[in-house]
Amino acid sequence: MDDLCAECGFRYDVDDAPAAAATVRRLAGEVAEALRTPGDLATRRRPEVWSPLEYGCHLRDVFLMQRERVLTARRENGFTPTTMGRDARVEHEGYAEQDPNDVARQLADAASLFGNVLDRLGEDWDNEMVYSWPEPRLRSLRWVAVHTVHEARHHLRDIRGQLG
Image (tube, rainbow, N blue to C red; front, side):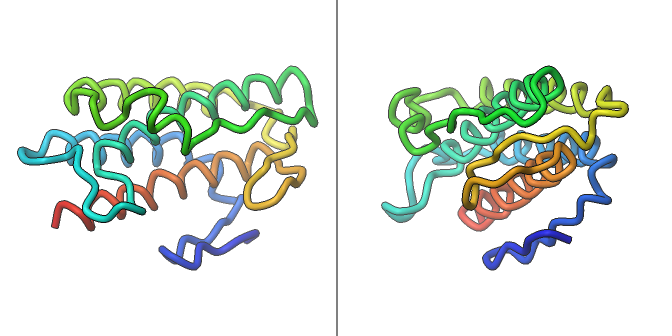
């Protein structure tokens, strides 16, 4: 156990890393299902909280970014990735203007792509990268996999909390 999320109670346990691919795929499916819910998915309920659609877009991009980071760490153990610019992406990519059905499909695809990379890690689980959250620190790919599960679970909770 490495970290605990004060908001959602998620406990990071790197021993759970081998199950991360399946868990990410399952959680992405649940988020995709939520994005197919009729109603207003694009409006923020509070200015400081993303809309359900924006959270869905964010997760899609997290899966794609994590995939590239893990692939790079397999080639360049110990590298420092650039940040994804999560807050800027909301505006730059027009998250709230995207079609929820497209995002649901893309989210499932991104989770599948990321899961495939995790499924094929073999002996590289202990490769590392300097991960910037919550502060820059050398993290194993096991931790990155578990952290990505946390992202999915946490934001599914955020989405469900808004949809009731």
